[in-house]
Image (cartoon, rainbow, N blue to C red; front, side, top):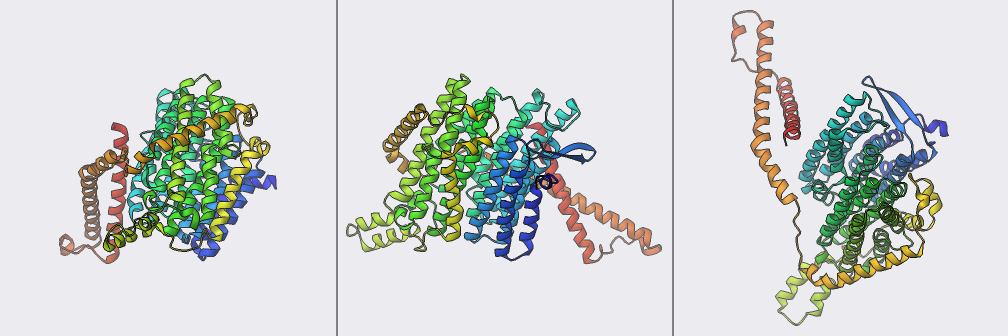
Length: 599
């Protein structure tokens, strides 16, 4: 079995399953997706450390399968969450095409993680952007525009990464991992990878896209792209980088601050993706054995508890029709199972002892402290307090606080019947559309994920066995770790009580998108559209001219000069339209390249 597992990358099975999902009925397609993803987990578990599957691509030496502690850790959790996400998607009425896009996206991420060279990694990197964009577009509505912006951001990031890889190749003569990046190439790589990871200033695409599509698509999107970015950082900077560590600290602070101010559930959770990936980036930047082990353990744990949180938010939206905290409240009574699962996920992300987040967040903080980066340690600690604040807010306003309906009932008799009727109408979003809690499929996907969050916080030996770095240096159950957790929670709960009144008045927290999106729209209207139009005109004229020349050469006689003859049959018109579309794509690509070169 072990030898059989080494004949191809695990991503192959996921891509095959994606193709099957497209042609079979919905139920069968999702079943195939779940089985294929779980089989991929088994496949990855059978791969011996040090496995290399080398070949040649475009005349260059490449490695399609590279197994070490880093790739195995990330691959295992990716395979699991692809299975859990597929089950959750089926239980939330996602169609077969969405399952296809989600699986192809997961396969691209697995391909990037198990690549043993930069050329293979970049190819899968670009495929990730393609499938994620299609997954967003499939959501329709506001997700379509978000998908377009997603594609633009990630193509720019991919261009930076490709430039870094080419500079490295020019210096080393190989795409294989091992040699580091030069100074300029390292900067370009940091920007390209940082866009995927969600560095501060490069994170806007994330909070624009993750809250938009179908709830199951949000789960998959939040689980993969930023984690591939964090993984790739350790390939680009294997010895760590202090500046990178502080960039991680900035992600933690900015992400958690913006999360506290949000009123939409999935937008709040998306800012916490930025914040939690910041812990991973900080660990990779420190570069010590303990910090790297903590970073990748936290990556695995983050995929679990953050996916669970997005599932909870999705169930709330699925049942109530709203994810606005100001329209929710009291859901613990009508959705007790969802509330219980939320408590597990919230305990994990905030670092309650006995959960997986407690273990790995402590490892990162200890690694930072051992490296002597005291200011960074304080930044990460403050971020941990902010995480407690934001999830206390989430739980209080969604599940424990009074719903708008309760407020209306309390005030009955204090206003006119018309006013009361209007208030009841406005509060309907907080009432579940069905009296049932989570469905069986939703509960199974969420319950197993919650169980893993607890198991990985209690049974550490098998967990530590798969981690890279030096997890043995961790002391997760020392008295000091419990005391730190108690102080963090006391500070977080106390801060929430103090600022709760102010948070209630916050309705919108602007981010860089208020500047970047209008700027992008102006750029599109002022540069891209005219250029694309000109390209289409030139392309169409060229095809018309070529067609006239063909007719002139093929039909001798006086009428060969009759330029007034129609272009031809419908097929010719269609080919002209197709060519115009291709010209448009080429022009848009050139515009992106120019932006990368000159901005």
